[in-house]
Length: 223
Image 1 (cartoon, helix red, strand yellow):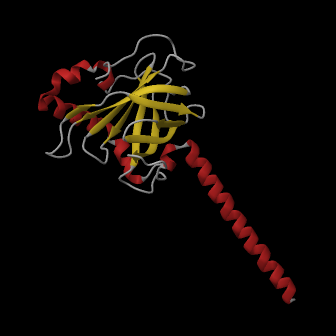
Image 2 (spheres, rainbow, N blue to C red):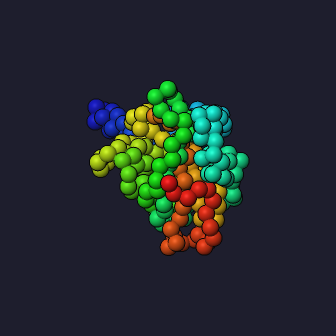
Image 3 (cartoon, rainbow, N blue to C red):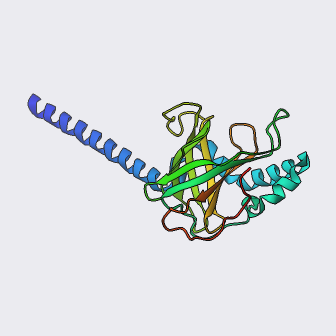
């Protein structure tokens, strides 16, 4: 009898552990395809308010004396500009960050950084910035036929490994990816942890990137 009870207990524990493992696997699978399941609550809120951040950032930049610079960016900073099929093909890209608006008095309301190097891999699912002192790395999730969602983290300085997404609120990054030209895309990051109201990362595909037309790019040239 005692042996039978022990066997029953072991079986129950095994079933419980197996059920827990299946539940965890199902959650990981859901998070891999649904950005809403993968995103933190704070990032879901930021993404819901992306347009408010965009308009506020533009107003501050223009009011701060940068209206000509903002106008020169053209469709890159037009919140209504979006071309169908936003997915990024695997390959190498030139990428730069435009900062709009300011979270405090000590920072400019407009900053345009030079181009650095970015790479997309894993069938358009992974994006990493290869050069520069502030480097994003993360995953791209499908959302609609006009946009995708980026969730990732920020690497600083000579760091070689990134924090896991969701581990450090100050490093987490959440943005909206849209295609704005034949060879160009942008990711808009509303209310980033530092400095600005909106960060816009422009990505321009290299000539050797497969699946991209040979036309021109939208937005401004490098600074």
